Length: 258
Ligand SMILES: [Zn+2]
Image (tube, rainbow, N blue to C red; front, side, top):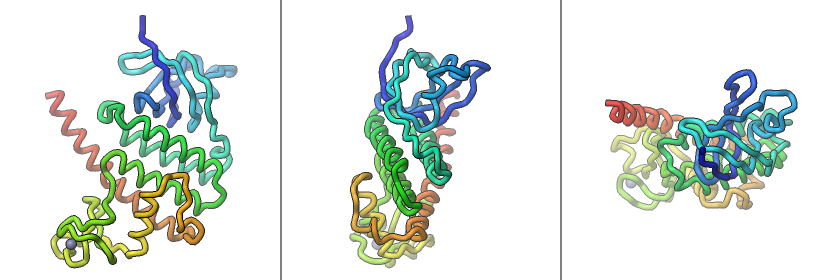
């Protein structure tokens, strides 16, 4: 008999397996990223069909499989329904799902961080569903980027020069390639990348330290343009390490096959 297990999970994406069944990719509290078959989910009256939509959190019972698990029962915990009525909310939620899917692949990220990432994901979708302005949305996406990278060990150190180890106090130089910051004095030693204004550095540091659902002194004064700049800065950084990461995994794959 197949082994069953219970977990809470948030749907990241789903796609058809055949005429009746779908495959759901979800991030679970207990096991990280899971891919599971939702049998009969494509039939018009299927209850499961509604529960496997993107960004819904469910309590599930699953049967373990070699490559794919199978959903036996699903009970929704939160549908984050207001995400679906707003194109911006939907786009940023998809971006978040995409980076979780990319960075938390089942084989490489065991379950050590899964509960922490699950809580973060649950909170960010809950807050996105309720947020009122584009600036709020951008700040949530930014905080998620900073915190997820931190949990996964790719966090940026906004406080120490990576070359001379002095504590950063002014404008800094950042390498999106390595994710390292250095002071202006060390800039000639190979860092020819982006100059970061001290205000931005302090703001990002505060965003990184604050809980995702707590207010900071910046929340009321930041405008959309500033929030977008910081979001895009992190997106570029994440794009760079995800390329690097794919290459690292390619090497691992070829080693294990060879
Ligand atoms: Zn330095």
